[in-house]
Length: 301
Image 1 (cartoon, rainbow, N blue to C red):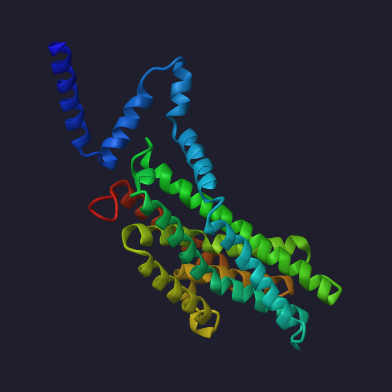
Image 2 (cartoon, rainbow, N blue to C red; image 1 turned 90 degrees about the horizontal axis):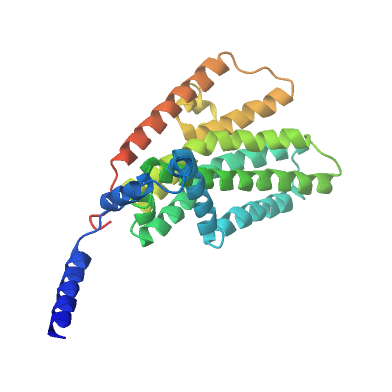
């Protein structure tokens, strides 16, 4: 009897010491990697489960599951519907031409998009902060897959919101005027151009929220809103290509002009798309390299 009690006491002491050990994101990630490298029932299955593609798909599914009953989902639904209602109400008595009304709506949408992105990214990172970033930093083999999954989910939600905002406006405006100014494919093209112009902003604002705080992200989002509005004027000539926040507004504006029969500006492809590709590659490379060494925003994360 005494021997059994002594053994239980020793086990209790070992358990107490193990509980006191600090579990860091790096240790947890190393533990997960070691567990997944163990041979299972099938070597092929273990290899697939440990691949970055399989892990990315699992993380994307987890992200969608995590946000489906949160404020993020309602923002992507209610904000477009509210914007549609406000503009249709205004356009019901406005004296603008039909083409001018559509162009004005797309311009306002492109200007507001950077600020909405900053709000969405702030809420998303705030959810991770409540769990001390363990989901993003510790519970995966390939660390960059967590950031890529969150970026992908937010970008997909943004695309859905833009399709709703543009498509819903097109349907409502068509009913109100009794005809379609542009074809459904052209409206879808407008939404796609706005989305392509803002996709880098999701990654940028995820970085700002992870590295600093939501206050910094919101301030940058506000500055981007003002910059996008300013660069729609002549002041943006020669400069807007270097500011991703103005890409969507400029590209959509040029697209509308092209559909009206006007030619694209000289050097549009080389100056806009070429510079955009270089800046995109640099932004992705720097942020994912930074995230490789990221261990949390605060010391206890």
